[in-house]
Image (cartoon, chains in turn blue, green):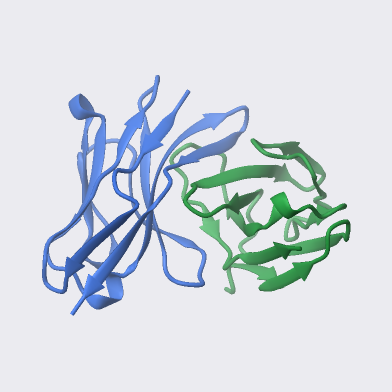
Length: 115
Length: 114
């Protein structure tokens, strides 16, 4: 069975500070890993994903994440937070399951950015 | 492209009432999904569909029904609303079944059952 753990339901940073959102996964097969972002009153949208190849993945809005197999982690980072980054972030792991994509989501981390 | 659209945005139901949450996508995607999102929890899969006429249960299907008569539409039906169904409901779609595919989400329907 696959699972995702996101450490910290809330993370607060100041504008311009480093953003680090943690995600650890459990998977019996090589994982495909995703970060989705949910802005207030909107649906989820893909930030970035790791499938194969380069373990450092770059996404939209200056975010990136590194797949570390030895640590079973896929932490999300951004060098300098912007007010517009305030949102909820979900890490997810997927597998193909009897003909459809099964996404298992973490419980989410709400990023708060203060001026 | 409008992407994935959902109606209504918000609804209050009384216990025992029924309603249908609408979901439409204009990307010609074969695969569609319904999730619910409870506070402090990740999204849970309710039902999914791999094409018109084909649906199946996800992780938390009890109390819900779906149909898929067209590629575009995937409505979710609540027959007898219960307070436990108070949640935010998201519809999503993908073009392929592969595990590396991106799911495209609608803006959600917030449902309150009193």
